[in-house]
Image (cartoon, rainbow, N blue to C red; front, top):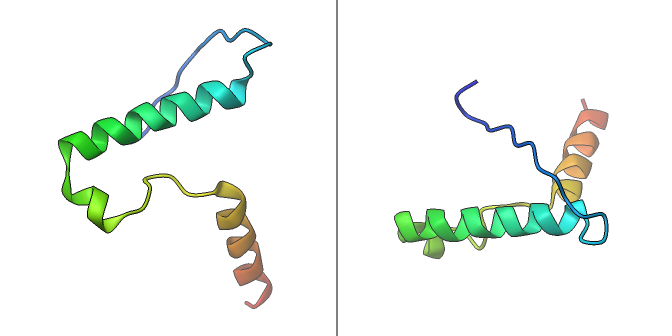
Length: 64
């Protein structure tokens, strides 16, 4: 699929996968905002809290 990327990385267990993901997402977000400055004023962040999104989705499914 052309709209996503697979990464194979090696992470020191002391560092933690969550830190790596946070760093990658932060760098990507900064690069996109540099390329598209109008995004800064329209979006507070390019990433959402996935737990909130999943919870909202599940709640919407209950009402159907």
